[in-house]
Length: 180
Image (cartoon, rainbow, N blue to C red; front, side):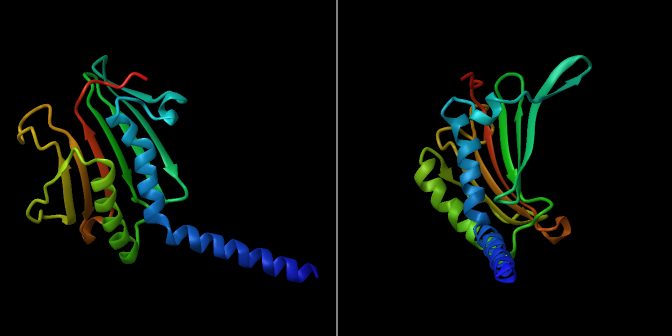
């Protein structure tokens, strides 16, 4: 009976790990929504309110405040950088635990669908292929030109094999700093 329980426990752990691994793209999209989307709505996500970020200084002047942590369900890591003046970058990346080819394809489709439903204020601007990138897609504020400082958006990119196929989803938000 004990042996059966051990085998059953091991099988359940294997199934849970497989299900978790198979759902990495969905977990990464949820992570982006939970951490990065609140910034667009002028609020800080709860995780940033509950912890003190690492302040970085240059010549005695505050350069940025950063938060960084791994997200185990997706295998992605999160980095939020808050620059003086209100510029905020929120990035999730699979560096260190790169998505498989099937996961990359699923993630691309999920991100496109998510952007259409959750960030309709942005317009998709897929540029020409860029060297060092296997995949590059952007969604930007359509009312502002490329050099306008009010322009913000989301970048979805994957580096080439030279950089281990690392995938990132980045919110570059260039508005006033969220305070609540």
